[in-house]
Amino acid sequence: MTSTTPGHPLVRAYLGELATALAALPPNRANELMDQITTHLEDTLPPGAEEQEVAEVLRRLGQPADLAAEAAGRGGPRRRRKLGPPWLPWSVSALIAVVVLGAGYLIAVESAPALQPAGSSIWWYPIDRSRGVWTNEPTGESVSSVPIRSGQMQGFVVTVINNSDWTQTILGPAADYATPGGLSDIQIAVTRYNRDIERGGLTFDGVTFTTPGSIPPHQIRAVRVLWRSTTCYDKGTSGLTDLLALAVRVGGITRTEAVTMDGWWRLTGPSSPPNAHNECV
Image (cartoon, rainbow, N blue to C red):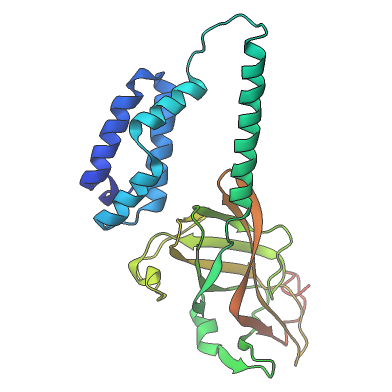
């Protein structure tokens, strides 16, 4: 967790109450839950969060005593009891309740809105930024075109917003994702919290990209997409995409999200001729 988050008085007080409430649990279970809560706060609260935002996040977590009681019910020692007719209805009811709750959880996760473009984008490498040309297609799309650099890394950065109430963690590219340059060395990374990016801008000053990368609810992050260009294009031909296909973890499940970007990204030929390094295959 960043130094600013635990330093907030509300967070300090909450974690202190949680530690007291967890004292009755086995140490391993208590440490596990404390780590989970701490990680959640790190993912959800940006540095310098306002008091109202901190209070709302803590409210969603619930009272420390309730969390401890729930953890004790799941992982604590259970009393032995005789199995007989009085136990069976309780057992069936509990099983039904678990199934219903589990189904509700999966429905909530599956129905969480996918990531959406947040409006800012740029080619990652300076050489491509200097050569990039924006055009408007007859169909209305905006297209940024650069020459393909066969055998070399190319890519772009776009901002996306998480409009859901769940933290969404980008794990990498989806299994079938293809870039304009091909399938080689595809790398996807996400920025940590940055005030300029959160306000809709795009900066690389002091920005760190990580994989996997988490996007807390209703926040904006920049996503970097890199690949090694190995697709062959003749002069006058090109390849383009406006799709970002991601493997994303939401809650306890992993799903594929297809983010349709605001513009097209195009690589134009001619490619370098094939050689011993397979720069164009």
